[in-house]
Image (cartoon, rainbow, N blue to C red; front, side, top):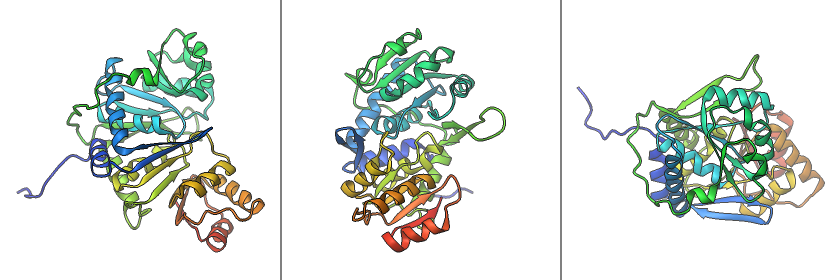
Amino acid sequence: MHSTMQDFPLTVTGILRHGTGWNSSRRVTTATSEGYRDISYGELGTRVAQLAHGLRQLGVTDGDRVATFMWNNQEHLEAYFAAPCMGAVLHTLNIRLAGEQIAFIANQAEDRVVLVDMSLAPLLAAVLPELTSVRTVVVAGEGDLAALTASGKTVLRYDDLLDGQPIEYSWPDLDERSAAAMCYTSGTTGNPKGVVYSHRSSYLHSMTVCAANGLGVRNGDRVLPIVSMYHANAWGQPYAAMMAGADLLLPDRFLQAAPLVDMIEQRRPTIGAAVPTIWNDVLQYLHANPGRDISSLRLVACGGSAVPLGMMKEYEQSYGVHISQA
């Protein structure tokens, strides 16, 4: 006997539809060298559809791996949804790894396309000739493409790929247990090991992040994921924010304490997420620059290693910010 309750597959597509529909007015803010750029979830959904069409034109089919070599920014977020929702698999490459490890990972995963930020293009260019399965590189941002084109791969600009594409996409019905994304371990013996996330696991993890006994991300929050989007899907923060109807604040490459505190003061996040070294750097900056205001933060998720008890107490007692071990 089966239940009579509604049933639907738990997929990233469901998060996208909910976020860009019910929460269409919520905002994504990306830090830039000139300040900040903003886009609504509704506008983001249009660009996600255009990116999916562009990837399909490049020959990306179901199950193909689409790699990213990017900071935490709007374009990376668009890839977070476009690739898995069209039936491909998002593969976030760790920009901190050595070239030979990046080559090993990309080749074992059989990545077909790589999306890269212009500021990271020199790092990718150095290893690109060794990425044997990669056919196309898509570059977000302005700059000289010569180092990338020297590899013999097809190199396109991100905005050109999206330009003129339809603003809606007929998202396929996906098995919730099919692969949505993958990443590779670091800090283990031997070569990195691949880890594959299903649509179901990503959906359930997002629900956990939103739960009261998780991080309690809720509608109206402003979430600042400093933890890299290539690291364990940024601990699920991007998907959880869209699911809950929380604004997203993305720091791009501006990960030093000063620009982070600027973003906290000016854009008023309520939840932040980063490794202990980042929060320690911010704390030392606050010591050296009294009067800076981080009072908007009600909760900080801190993980990757054990959080020093002294740091937790100082944030709580001096700044009213609770740190939760992620």
